[in-house]
Structure formats: C-alpha cells, structure tokens
Image 1 (cartoon, rainbow, N blue to C red):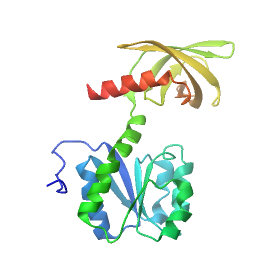
Image 2: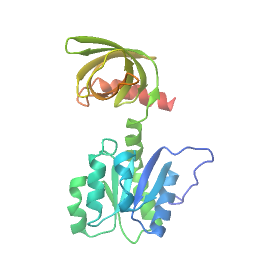
Image 3: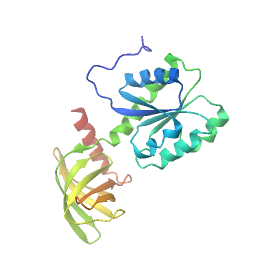
Length: 232
C-alpha cells in the first residue's frame, strides 16, 4: 500500500520541476510517475540540450552518472537559478559518483530501477525539492519600502516578494552589487529591517531586485510570513 502510486488529483498544479537528463524511456516513465505523486513535474532532455539548466529554473535534476554528467552539472551549479537545486544520480560506479561529488549529488537511484525503492527515495527527498521551490515562490504584494544605501535614502514600492528577496520599483537607480538595508511592513508582518544586495536592474521600467542577506537572521521572519501566506 505504501509503495503504490497515487494519480495527481485532477486540477492540481505541479509544485516544482525536475529535469530528467539522458535517461532510458523505462527509467523516465518510472521516475516521472514517482515525482508526479508528489506534485513534481518531470521534464525529459538529453545532455546536449541541457543548456536549459543554465537558463530555466528547475528544483531538481536526475542525471545518469558518468563522464558526460560533469559539464551538465557544472553549468547548472553556475546558474543563479539552479545552483542550489536537488541533484539525483542514476546508476554508475562508486568511482564515477565520487568524481561528481564536487557538484553536491544529494541522492542516487540504484540500477536496475525498481518501483518500490525509487518511490521510497523520492518520498524521502521530496521535501528538499519542494522547499527549494518555495524559496523562489514570488508573491505579488505592493507595499512601501524604505532603502538605505550608504548616505542615500530611497523610497520604492515592492512588486513581488519571496523568502529570498524582492523586486521593487523606485525613482532612483541603484547599481547591481549595491549593499542596502530595506525597511517595510507586510499585511500581518509588522515593520521589519533586513540587509540585502541589489541583484539586477531594468532601467527602462525603473525596476530592480534585492536579494536578502542569508546571514541576516531577520529575514527568517519574512520566510515565516511567506510560508504562512502559502499555507493559508
């Protein structure tokens, strides 16, 4: 009973995406079913098309262990979007797996793939995948934000917020890499101050993004607010 696959409920949306790289059809089908049970969509691709991992957001990657895997994983880990995604290996020898250890493989599916053991591994790791996705959930919310950048005081309006950062619109330009301290309130969250860094700008729309400093414990209050908002 515990190893049976339950179809995704009609109308239920996928919560995350997993790239399946260079897998045989039988393996793709089995793992797609396992991931689907937990609301994770599987996207098959070959390693020569895996440049998508450098330009699109994926919460997980399943790749056959071997020499061809290294450049794919290196490209993904260098990507701003996927440098923290969950990586699964499939098969390969211990020596081959050790060569890929620098890329932080989280778990390995043993071959031949068997449905009960594959489902057990996905069940054990699916919260890692979904938690990674939640870091990037962007909630549209407009609130006044005060920014301090050195001696500058800048007023802006938030556009979207996640537990990792926020996008804003302001009258004054800030260059990427600028350190700031942001102050704002969010509905049920009283005013909070948090350090961050400008990560991108769009001059034509006066939009810019701020990535919260992961060392600033005050950002945990924002994460708690995002989690509560998503669960409400």
